[in-house]
Image (cartoon, rainbow, N blue to C red; front, side, top):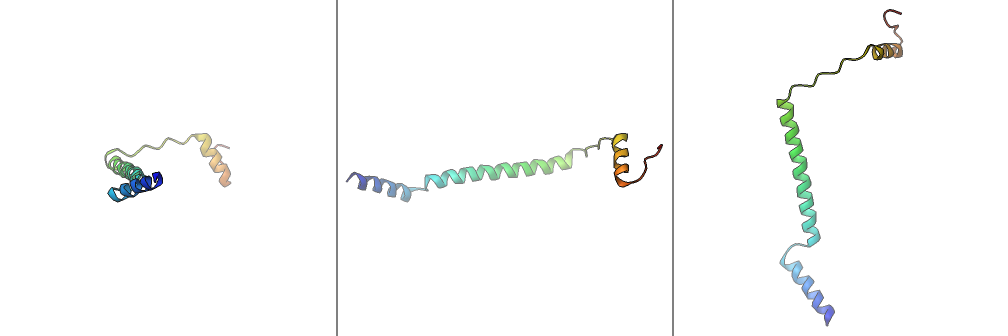
Length: 77
């Protein structure tokens, strides 16, 4: 008898509304989607408004190393 009552309660809940697991999934999915869309919008806004980043000047050591890799002798050697 007790099992029947529990079964009825579960069926009633399922009939009334959505499955609790599905609700959690939808909420989490919605928040994730909102987060991603928000990030994209902010990124696009930043691309338009912020000036482009200046590249750091490459050090002479790195230039020498790169030229040596390519097989070209660095100037002053």
